[in-house]
Each structure stands twice: as structure tokens, then as C-alpha cells.
Amino acid sequence: MQTRFSPEQLADPDIAEANDILRACVHCGFCTATCPTYLLTGDELDSPRGRIYQIKDMLEADRPPSASEVTHIDRCLSCLSCMTTCPSGVHYMHLVDHARTHIERRWVRPLRDRFLRSMLGRVLPGPRLADRILGLARLGAPLVRVMPGPVRRMIALAADCRTGADILSPGVYPAEGERRYRVALMTGCIQQAIDANINAASVRLLRRHGCEVHVAAGAGCCGSVNHHLGQERAARSLAEANIRAWTSIPDGIDAVVVNASGCGTVVKDYGYMFRNDPALADTARSVSDRTRDICEFLDETGLTEATGDATARVAYQSACSMQHGQKLTRQPVDLLRRAGFEVVEPRDAHLCCGSAGTYNIRQGEMADRLRAQKLAALKALAPDYVASGNIGCMVQLRSGLEAPVLHTVELLDWATGGPKPDAVEPEGKRT
Ligand code: SF4
Ligand code: SF4
Image: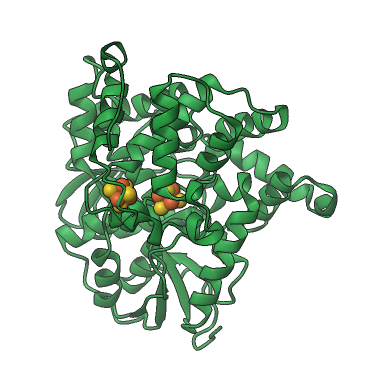
């Protein structure tokens, strides 16, 4: 694609990067075939190629976006399916991230939007604050019918919270038996408030696996909530806190282990995020290089022997951030099979379930249509359990399925000597 940035514009490293990405696009349109929003609306402006053109126009002219451009870029899920499909290696993720920051700086949203986005950017990154807000939302459940759409969706989210484990405190959780690895576990933010069982299962599984698990004080949200809202300053501040916390662990660590693939995609990109920051570039790169999704880590280092207690039919729902963001498709499925489960995958597994961070709160109608498609595909498999490696997808799907929706590590933990997950229904129950 031809671009017409001026030399002055290209002196900005972010514009220079956008220019390189834009020039890699040959407008072939292959990406449109796998873009969930284009498949729903049939509108080229809701396709990756259409968005690339809109971003190019906006950045080249160095102008505020139009209302239409904001609408179509806001509708992008950041599912990155287009990046998996693109034969030219167009780095759409970095381009749309840049566009979102540009929109945030140059566009004044309606008051209601500003309030919602500000609230999401402030509440979700803090697990304890999110816990309190979700508690309040549960109290508001009787008023759900008169609430505006985004609030209704927050209340639905609150209703799907699972209790049973406490938010993990910072500290060192020693390896069981001989210590083989020292790892930092990213405990995250909203995931802890919604389902603390995931971190509890991760710690048990890693310790049984010979890992000394560090939960670093000062580490928290990866920054992705703010990042995807275009709130770049807040995102960088959270990312910097994580980098400093993990690199301050005495004697170092072998890996940063992440159990939410949406967060893992962002942490693996810290090196890019801080590439122009002389004080943090090298450290951020070293953190990104050592970051592993928990299934990727267990696959690389060998899963603990399965006990044979857990056998069932599991429908594996691969999060977009897992399959497109991190390109991890084989590992979770292999691990579940090695642990004794029968694993099946839904049709159109490459398409998003509509969760996409805060998308299902901000873009309810599109999210609901994608959710309905995914639920139908999963129900057709008649699974005992549904497994996913990302809290967003789990919450998006839970209320629509009879089969319990669990994190992959909860099943792996159970199959290798851990407790049966509390959400598991009696053996033999099927959708
Ligand atoms: S597939 Fe890649 S090169 Fe083709 S239009 Fe889409 S982004 Fe551009
Ligand atoms: S990230 Fe997903 S929704 Fe956005 S343009 Fe790419 S395929 Fe479409």
C-alpha cells in the first residue's frame, strides 16, 4: 500500500512504525474472510482491510477521526484473526493499538461513553476494587431491567463470579519435592475478583510440577484493559510496575507464567511497548522473552504425571489471544489429552466468542451475536466440560451452557492430583 507521510511525520517513531505496517498491506482482502465483524455486518469498513484504510487516512492527514471511523475502529475486537490469515505479515495489532491511542487523544466522545470508558479503565485493573464493585453490582441485580445496557452487562458479569478461593497474596509458594524452576506467576486483576480458583489451581499445579512460585508485591494488571481503550499512559504505568516487580525478585526467575491469554499477549509485547524508552527497553524485552502462557510453560517443561482420576469429554475453546495473539494452538489440547481427557474442538474455532476484554460491555449487540454462534458450536459437541485459557471467554460463555466452563489449568490440576473443581457437575452430566 502506498503511503504519503511527510518526513516530519516520519520522524515520530510511532508514525514510522505505522508507515511500515501500512506499506506491508497489499490489499488482497484475504483477512476479510476470517474477520468476525465483517462476517456479521458485511461492511468493508468493518473489515481489517477497511480499517487499515481508515487508519491510514486519519494518520496521514494528522487529523481527528470522523465519527464513522471511530464507530468502525471501536467495533474491532482486537481478536487478531486477521493477523493469522494475512499472507503479508501485516502487524494489525500494533496498527490498531496506535489508532486507538490517536482516537483517545483527538476525539471527544459523548459523556456517557467517556464515563463508561473511564470507569472500566479505573475499576477493572484493581482486583480488590473490582471485587467491591462486582459485589455492589450483585446487589443491583433486582434493578437489572431498568439499567442501561453496559450496566446490565456488568451485573451479568457479577452474577457469574465463582467463589471458593481467596485472592492470592504476594509471597513465595515453595516447590513440592525437588525445586526445578523459579517462576513469577502473574496473578492479574479482574480475573482474581471473578474466579480466584484459577490462580489457586495454577499455584498447586506449578508447585507439584517442581516450581517455586513467586507472587511479586507490586505486580498486578498487565495493562491490557487500558491499552485496548487507548489509555496509553495508564497502560504503560501498570506495565512498568510489573516489569520492576518481576525483575526485583531476588536471584531472578526462569519465567513469568501467565494464566490469562489476553494478558499474556500484552506482556509478551512489553518489549515493543517500551522499545523507545532507553531506561526500560532492555528490561522490558527480557521480561517479554521470558513470558510464557501456563500451558506453553507446562508443555515445554513436561506435565506432571496424570493420576487417571479425571476422564471426561472436554470441548476446548481456544481464546483469540491464545491462538491468534500468541499462536498457541497445540499445547493446551496436547496437555489435556496427556492428562486423560477426550478433547474436541468447535466448528469455526478461529472466530471470537465476543468477549474481547471489555468489548462485551461496550459493544453488546455485536458481542451477543458472536456469543450465540459460539454457544451453538459448543453445545453441538455435547461436552462434559468446556475449557478455555482466558477468563474473558469463560465468563462470556458460562451462563449459556449447562456444561461447566473451566480454565484449562483447573482440569490439569484435577487430573494430576489436585481437587475436583467446585464447578464440576456429577460425572456423566452432558449438555
Ligand atoms: S490479508 Fe493482509 S495484506 Fe491482505 S488486505 Fe488483509 S491485511 Fe492487507
Ligand atoms: S482484529 Fe479481529 S475484528 Fe479486528 S479487524 Fe482483525 S479480524 Fe477483524
